[in-house]
Image 1: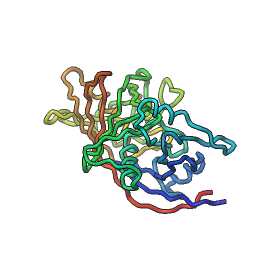
Image 2: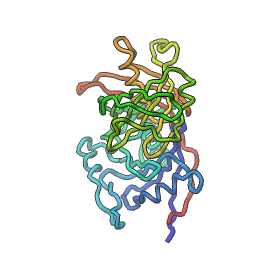
Image 3: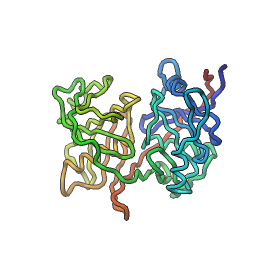
Length: 305
């Protein structure tokens, strides 16, 4: 039997999402339903689906269709009792994702515009994710999210990308989800990469990784801000116009490669626009923030099997 789903389509620098409200946790979708929604030919079309659910009500669908509690919601409230809302995020193929830097900004915009939460300019809101609680600030025209601590993760695998002549070494960085960042030599090489094919990692990682291809701008630093250009292949979604966590990982990797004296503020160009990254010290270690726009495009109703 088909049921109606009220949804909103939104994007952050072209990284697009289908969002819907389910505060009480009564309507988690199956992987097949999510994939159908994200299909760009037969569905709405998106890089992922975001369910707006309260952390205390977070649940998931068992294979037999039964609702079971998802411990990530309780973990978010244990980490920060103010994390009332949870961003339940899924990739376009229906698989779970730990965190999405563009998605969380669009999610905040959705909560605000739907009247589910109040985030006045200058206010900060705690949002639960499977990568941990993230603090998001309404800066007026944009949203800034504290992505928390980061770490090198996964070593330096060789990465084979179709359209790039030879394998290149990457660097593994985790910002709540896994990334491998690869430096290319010039714009033509970046433009020639064929990201319709999944980049191959050697050694492969069991959980997979998002892969970012990066070119440094000339000059690399202008007015104290680092400048890079990036394309990305997201696991479970393919090439996207932007990836917030990928932008953060790319800036961190480039700063590492640049060495001492490299800036802590970066401007990252992606096919869908540009985003700002800032690294800053905290009592628990270095954090990194991501700033950029969030847009809601249209609302509608779709019939789901």
